[in-house]
Length: 386
Image (cartoon, rainbow, N blue to C red; front, top):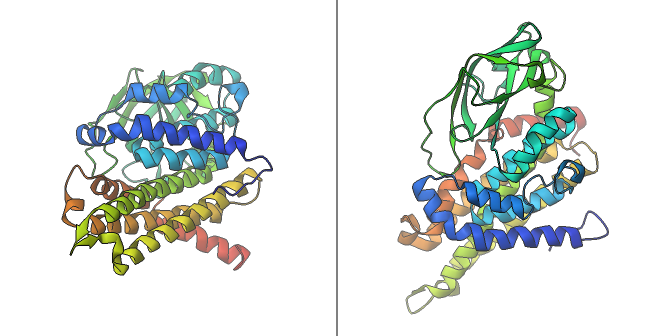
């Protein structure tokens, strides 16, 4: 049952049903092959765009769906039930769409937003570097003014979509002495001279999400490459982080939900000692723990989303949702593998893939340790009712 943050639930039910149908009919049948081949399903993403599953919170006047963070969380969970990599792509487009909507000029929005929302071109969110993962203040990529334009030099690593993207939104230093106030965001076409890509990384899980390194060797950029104000890049990136964490938390809930559904079906049909596994109380308790922990994580996700939509402080709530959901999905997909026994350890069984896909939820969009730092700081500042 969806808790209702507005009087009319029909919009949320409609977007949920659209995402669920797409996940069940278009995504899930491809998930095993996509994982095995580590392939990037361009046509699937274009089909996804055609049914309105990109740019959930981007205003309709800019070509988006025009809904809110709560709807975005619903979509992320449902898509992740089909395959987490597909939800990941929805998340990347959402964050870039939000940056362009909030901070882009009319010219920048007209040039980049329609193609991102239609999957005509693929985008990348470029922050992390070899020495700047959890510590964004460690960014060393620089952009130097040359005439009315810029020269970009540096490297990024572990970048989602790097091997396949057409354009990146790159965080770089424009003032070496100003700390976090000396960073800016640049829109960088990846066919520009001086841009090169490292090899695609081969990951444990979420293998169809393409991740790799980017190198910028004195890349010439025009004045229109700067997104928003110079020196506000760190602030702009951080301003979409709460939504990003809610999205990953919802993605984790979707993976766990898929594990619960697969485990329940297996427990009802698999027989041992002459009776279904589901008849054994010990296994029933495992299923019960899966269900209650998923429900708890979903509640934290929805709470954080509604706080964001209401314009209320949501920093701690988003970190709580991401931290709890990330730990929950790793624990409960491990239980799903346990319920399947030896079969759960074999490639080709959904729960084996779900277990591998779950682990990254404790790492990206801020590690679990970073989330605990955020929560603790909010407690120290605002007290136990944070």
